Amino acid sequence: MDRTASGQRLRLGLVDGDGIGPEVVGSARRVVDEALTAAGAPAAEWVALPMGRRAIDEFGTALPESTLEGLAGTDGWILGPHDNASYPPEQRIAPGGTIRRHFGLHANIRPVRAIPGIRAVAPDIDLVIVRENSEGFYADRNMAVGSGEFCPTPDVALSVGLVTRAACERIAHEAFRLAGTRRGRVTIVHKANVLPLTMGLFRDTCYAVARQYPAIEVDDEHVDATAAHLVRAPGDFDVLVTENLFGDILSDLAAQLGGSLGAAASLNCSATRAMAQAVHGAAPDLAGRNRANPVALHHSAAMLLRWLADRHDDPPVARAADRIDRAVAATFAAGIATADLGGQASTAEFTEQVTARIHFR
Image: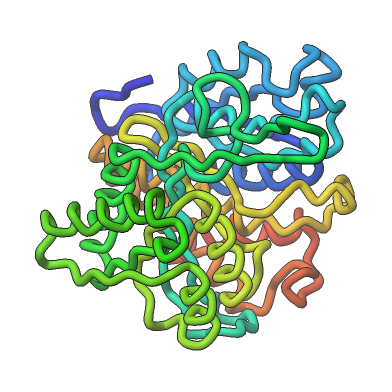
């Protein structure tokens, strides 16, 4: 769906998913509604769509075609976590990966910043990992037909990693544009010393794109050295751009350094589509117990609103995103947190506290 003017009502998809998904997605919806109202933006129209175990039970598939069609008719959407490990064997392809591929969501933007009021291993961390989202070593995204993992014999397993110049250029531009809004530094993360063709292509293409951004400082590191550097001095980094699998691993590490993987937000996007998705999983052991931490999806939803506001030049929607981030920070500053972050608030209680603070100036 393509909105052509600011001030129009947003049409947003809502996909609960599995486990704690209904609780955290519901919390994010309430926070977004409150923020849009407080910012003077029109109320959103929500489109609820099925995915996951309940979709299997009703439609025989974790990701019905009607869900993809429904998402195509929205401005953007919030995706809950999936628990595909618990699906029947023939259904275990991750629906989130299928959605990213279907809509060409080539960039996964994962910011990490220490949360004031929450103990962090690295209180000075403030970085963004820009993860190439469409190929690399992830088997569900690197073949036109079939999977990138296969067994020529029962005792031999092979995995194909895909790296193309076009995808490298695309993600490099995302990283350099983002760095221009931050501290102006990009680190290219690769493993070209042992994968000279694939990771060499990634590194060299990113450097070629860097020449179009002379104001941005650029360097590169091997992925293992980056992991060590993150632990030792995370404040050295601004924007990191890297391959799919490397980005997944490094962003989890960075999130934990910043306080908790449970608070890690992300946005999956292309030039025309965006999807808010928390980094954490479905946590089925917490499902229905009112104990899930909704913060990651609050921040992810704010990222989605900011992306939409930038694309459509919609200041009230941008203000709504800012209100969400400020309200979450104010809630933590007041000493209110869920159990995983050392607090005592339930999911519902934390949501109430955030929505109340959305109206604070």
